[in-house]
Length: 298
Length: 290
Image (cartoon, rainbow over all chains, first blue to last red; front, side, top):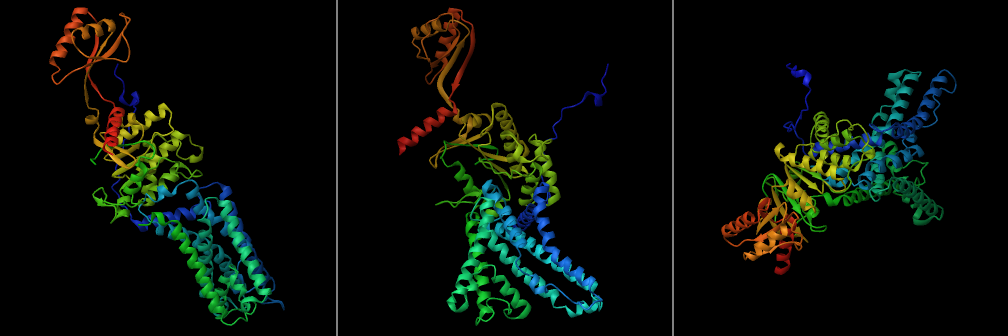
């Protein structure tokens, strides 16, 4: 009896198909590393535990904006109309949630590469050490920017919608916010991305990197506080507070000078000094990063 | 080096991994120049790397991601667009035998499965040359057989392979050419079959009467080499007979002796050197040169 060929079953080898499609170069590889790092930091394609913390922190930093908008809505026809807990300038600040976000995400995108010895396989690809640093910096910058700007967007849109004078009037009155907030947030994000990644690149352990990021901010705050109270360095002690430096840049963007509430407010040339210190920390952090990944640089 | 499967052999510390780093442009040679896939490494390391696949000896995989994600990400890092990278990852994982396990986290994989993922990430971008550093390290005998079978198929896919190992048997089984290193120096290089050169000996194996055969051959003036005495006449066994420049008379003598004694001949063949012997002999040559 002849067997139906289809009923015999077959062990077949699908073999190997060469790839003859498009191939990108360094830029494509850098972009791919950037996307992979963003996905990793916010827990995409990972378990829910990795997604929880970044999203929870984003929710936490959005609460003040939501409350502010809610109060604005509730008091729009009362004598308290126009009341606000904080200004847009003040909202571009350093919150514990932002610090925690940075201390969790930055180590997560670089430490495992070193600890799990993935770096040699990454650098066997068409990219260099500089490309690696750019991709990681870009990823953390984007995330911190989004983390800090989304509550601002919520606040702006909310205030626009509940404004008694009308949305267009509110937007016209606050037109400068549309460029000042993104610029200040970008300065903040660049600073924290570089600083946190530089610290994280020095160790293979995420917990050590996260603790070090907190440690540097706390120690520098304490040192700056001691110098300020000792009235040393002509009142320039707060410049040693790494947390305060991006706030000086923020003040320069919003006000053109250091705000009166800043500990540097009455120090001559505080704005310029703060900007120099900001750029120094930023440059030093990038230099540390390039140095740490120099072995793949050709 | 020629296309195909090339074995890079040497003891630990011989410089195999360093050579890989040089080929990848991740280390600079103190002198000389390197070309890989017709491209100068010093002038265009990124271009060279775009044509290479690299499988390191050590663990190198993100443990908390699925095999499919890991391989697809490495495909994208090699320059493939996202969609083709995922498709290639699926195909290559299928090729290495991980089709069903590809959505499981790599951290839960056995050593053999991780080795397969490492091989898959090296192949995902369809390289011209795959640098495989000890691909059978840590594998059980079955896993080793399967890995060698996979590696031996790569040249038929158009992928040349440089296989670094200290297991000469692996090289003898799958490689067309061999390069031997010792302490950073080239010891010997050439086609595998050339290195498995003739030793000037014939191996005679009989199913019985090995002792009588040895005594008779010696009585006929031949030089017999064996691992031990042949005291039990009824034993089966093998012995080597030294042949000179002309093996004809020796072969005639062996034939006559076997016929006279009426012994059951099992095998009569030229004895080839093993790669181990070639490596030891070449190392001795290097030592003498030093």
